[in-house]
Length: 263
Ligand SMILES: C[S@@+](CC[C@H](N)C(=O)[O-])C[C@H]1O[C@@H](n2cnc3c(N)ncnc32)[C@H](O)[C@@H]1O
Image (cartoon, rainbow, N blue to C red; front, side, top):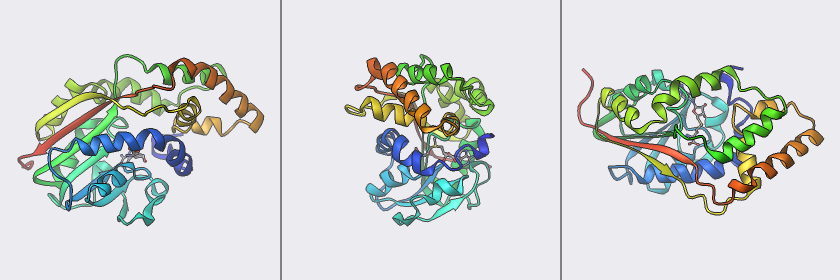
């Protein structure tokens, strides 16, 4: 499976299981905006099932949601914002039309520089660009515990995920490097920092369900019959127990302003 199709067939599971992690992170990202979003036109790019769109709309923004996956971006299309299927690297949008562009966990999927250039292009002067990614550096102990169980059952990370981790994360997961990349893309007043999201007392069940719903693992889990799947979940619950509840996943949040347009 390629990265381009990794989210196919995943919208419901993603929204239900991964959403308990991504929705709070989307609220934290939107809250970090350097400009007020109420009444403003905000692009949620790499929208998935709309975690950022929901968070921005809750702050009074008018939202347009874009994603490369029709299924993901259509999942909550009844919520009142227009949805568009497009690639972040070739947005079918005029220059400077948005007051802000927000990319929740998109820049960890592809080289961040060209994507940030495109986000800067569609935001007006004085507007904002916001992005979140997973932090690099020390391996997340809860994710590592679950991945080790899944690997012991024969799961092998897909090539696109390996490439993402080995090539993209060097920049996307590092606040200093992401800051440099964002400045080169034309952003000003750039801030990037590691944010540990307080998910409250998320149960071990919820942490396991989240991890098994991610696009690099979910298709493989889907190949298991129900008894095997139940046993895998049981083992993953035992493994993650020391790390949850109280798990606070580490993200990198990025915020900057568009103070000049690329020539
Ligand atoms: C990790 S999900 C994040 C979804 C949502 N922003 C959130 O925070 O929950 C990443 C999303 O980015 C989308 N995506 C990946 N590459 C993309 C690209 N080049 N252009 C547009 N969307 C892309 C995927 O289809 C997926 O829905």
